[in-house]
Length: 82
Image 1 (spheres, one colour):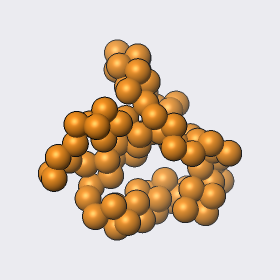
Image 2: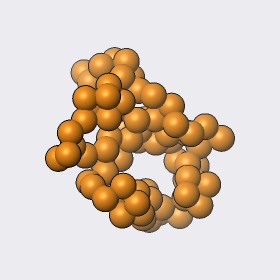
Image 3: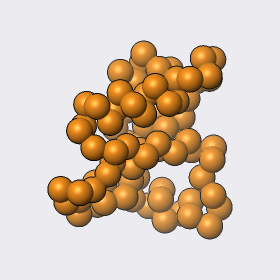
Image 4: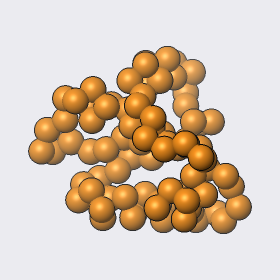
């Protein structure tokens, strides 16, 4: 699925990455996209939510806010790298 949408790398973060998730948890995923097709980001988010059966929050590495970056990257677990 990551190849289909031009993902260069992806990493889990948040409660799933810390093994603290519960039944109501969402999946937080950092992605670096190759660019190209403008709707790939949103289509990937929809497909992942359907596959996992829960809400998926996608965040691009380049869009990480400086005040949260260190905390998010400390939790990050790489799940895909091209």
